[in-house]
Length: 335
Image (cartoon, rainbow, N blue to C red; front, side, top):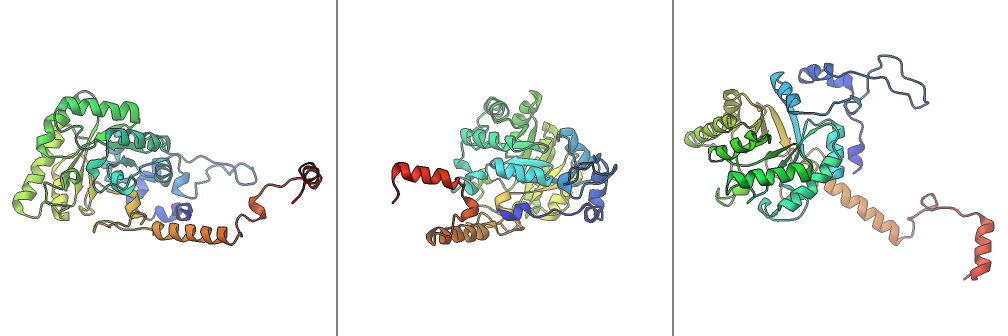
């Protein structure tokens, strides 16, 4: 995973991006010691975005980003290392997505993940997260039957998993359930468009909103979920023009995944964008690295060195004083 340790963009380059300037100005820079231990000069700016002190993100943080038209950077995480990397990189929102069923657990669909799975993975993600806002998916079968089921399982995810909000899939038919959740104080991230949990009923992983009638239904769903109390909506796999209209018609953030750049933010599955999950790659995924290839190469090199007895080398072993070694050999006999 060496690529995760690459130096991040310098602030001088970040400041050239208008959408970042306002966000950077909102942080207070604090001097830190140099490698030799001497205090840094007063007012010294951090050298990367990871060095910027970040308070814990809240719903208010996300609303302020939306209000200032600063895109909300969202990414999934499924364990402690993936959460740590996402948080330290500066993501605003981490989603413990039920996609972990496929990319982390090897299932063939998201519907096979359980509440126990989601709680287990959520705990690990929360332990690795210091600043980002953390949301977890309610898995298939835990919220559809009744609002009471949804409340009971959402409470479990928050209390036992440690997350701050839940996400559920569905359009206006889920409005009553969402209203019930938000009424009792559970923040909800909605999800419309392509609904992976319903892919069997949709005829597979198909783009939604490609006709005037289906696009109008998506807008109707978005308005209903906003009214029900969602703090934001995921828009998945729909024409960019439709997502842009929906984004303009509602007053809560939209988080796009395969829905164009006009959304209020974007989300990708971390293992997809890192190139670690190679079973299939959705069209909307941009792979920023090829971790799968690099991992196999690294493990292959390790195997070669083990077979050749070139690993471990002396620098990987622990010394013993020669006189102690001789005493030991004299005591047990030397082969």
